[in-house]
Length: 147
Image (cartoon, rainbow, N blue to C red; front, side, top):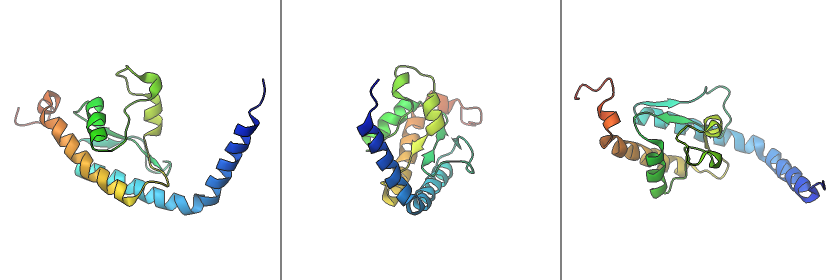
């Protein structure tokens, strides 16, 4: 077939631009990532960071939130202006976790701001609390002394 010369040149230019800013962008994105991870784990009980911290890409956050349904969480986050996903397009309609999402997690990039992280840390605990308040799964969790 015919090579996509324009695409090849465009990709090379995009890589060149990204590499020219990597030393500037990486520390800032890494700091936001770590603040988001720490904030979620501190503010929301029964959350877990998927994967280790040491070998994590600067813009990668992948969190499990127990005792709620992922689709409900995504819907309420969307209503609050937070873009998130519980699966990839190729698994639409499946209730299984996406292998892609499990590998990638939430992406933070150089356009993400500290205010964006603050907003997520404000909204996410409220959304999780709201969903858990109406969840029989939350009520029936093994350590619930009030059931």
